[in-house]
Image 1 (spheres, rainbow over the protein chains, first blue to last red):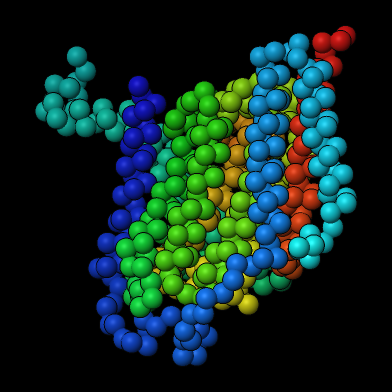
Image 2 (image 1 turned 120 degrees about the vertical axis):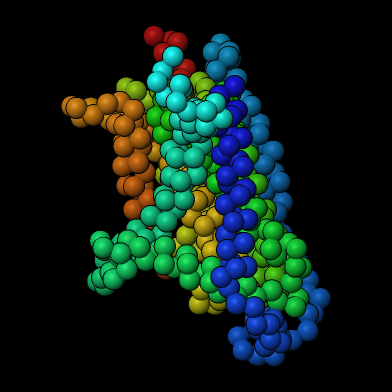
Length: 118
Length: 345
């Protein structure tokens, strides 16, 4: 129970601290609004209008790789955590991990310049 | 009945009991709020002083009695006494709230980090998973903060930030898996106890290297600081934040750096195990060794800023999936082989 108490006190403190800083900023900081201050920063230029720009397609392969590896990472995680409870499954675990790592190394060596492939 | 209880009225006695209780000391003093803020401030000062030495400068000198130690406090006061400018294009509520939330989420990382067998805010059987959950959600307030500014530079910065952070979360997760399997536990305290005879850096040197590179990238330090690239993106996603907002975002990133550095010490460098110093009790010696080892890792991370140029986003992503993921998978394979060998002999 004591452990929960410490966590709750810590959580309350951690929430109060930024609010306290914000309050101090409200008290200490000046408040002199000007149009010049509140326009978006664009290196001293008059801000230009937004243009609808396409998704950076160059990086799309990385998104696909992320999804593929996220699944693989969970497979690798679950497989290797099995070792803790079932030491007799060791050979199968090693086989799966060997296949996954060998294929990832093979891919890494063969898929160069991924950005320009699409 | 103790003498104090006879003199003091019951409410004050209860207050004293509460203040001296284990939970209060851990949450407020060590390793709680006061320690976390002092550690964060110290990191900023240490970085400035160390980089100054690398560049043959003196660094902070005048504020405070020793080596400009109070410079950071003076800077904090300066930030707080500036005007908090909210741009026209910003989403106002998010613009105020997200820096706060960033600090809260990143400070909560310390709740799961033990600084000794008893110096821990929240003991849990799955503390490493809880830590990883908070590491995984910590970029979200920052991404929202960048998006809420309604600025083009912030938007470019935040897209880079999201790509980089999410690409490096998989190697981080896989490197953690290696440690979990070797220690046969999800509890960070038990993981450290499993390193009593040999720190995990020796069998898992590949995993350590991958974890270290991932750490530097997760906290976007140079050479992986594309999202905040000062010279081209004018602080990237932080560009619109002034005074309080900038202070909170900086605090959030430094807290994350500190938490990950301490985690590296606990997972790979044997945590609180170190040579005993005669005359110093264990409950002081344990945090001492953790902090000393963390300082070594912190120095390594900060020195990268003094030595390396920034690398491009394409190289960062390539390094992530082409080098780090195979490295961590290989590490996992080696760990499972090491774990299996004793069965056959």
